[in-house]
Image (cartoon, rainbow, N blue to C red; front, side):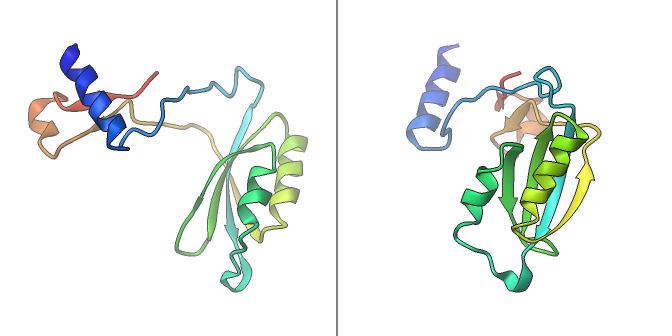
Amino acid sequence: PPAIAAKIRDMESEGIIRRFTIHLDYKKLGFLLRAIVSISVPNQDVEAGTHDILMGIPQVVRYHRGTGMYDYYVEVAATSLSDLDHALTSLSRVGKTQTSITLESYERDSFCLSSACDDKKGKDTVPFPS
């Protein structure tokens, strides 16, 4: 509908929507193992080069820098245990790691644009691509 297209264009021009993307099926691409690697950097020595190190590891899908016990939360996709081990060895250069294997992942299909969405049953939602 034209109203939705106009809303999306407005959100793009305001910088709310920064890009459109695709969702990959990692299993179909051969990445059978997924993991979240939490990394604690000694003495909060968060280096400027950490981004380059993390993004230079092919198995790293994305990472988040956060607060709490760990400084980084890294999502990894691996084709085998050996591939995961290689990624973990590389990640240990950043700091002390703790790894959790991902059994299932869930993601929202849409995002509510106002607090009144519960009453409108999704009238102001923007669908995420499938």
